Amino acid sequence: MKTIIYLLPLSSLLLAGCASTTSTVYPQGNNSYTVITTSSAADNAASAAMKKANKVCAMHRKNIIVKDHYVKYQGAISRKNKEIVNTATEIAGSLSKTFIPGMTSDTDYKAVVKFSCK
Image (cartoon, rainbow, N blue to C red; front, top):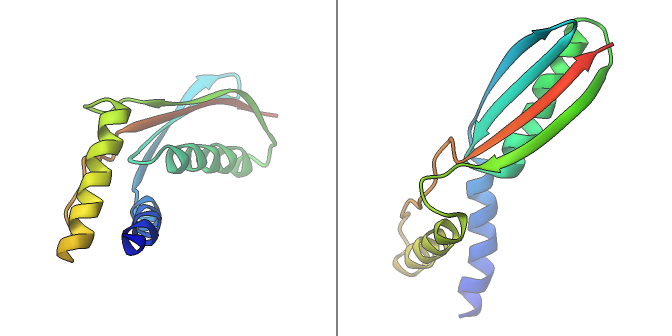
């Protein structure tokens, strides 16, 4: 049992590290922008959105001023059920020593950053 306890956090970190992100910048006029990023992990979506926003302002040699930001779960099943299914598949994969994909999608989380460059 202790082996599973140690493997679950490790496999969660490995899966989170592999999360892909997609970011889109929407100009709003007057040096204001909105970045929308999707990812299978909330923290990856949030950090990728902020990196993209900073990059936009850096390209204009200006400083970023964040007006609003949030991360929203938009997965096909509830977040609680997703965690249960993913934990069960991680345990089954650990016991069978094979990879069993969980219920994740590259669009499960949406991060939005509204900002301006000054």
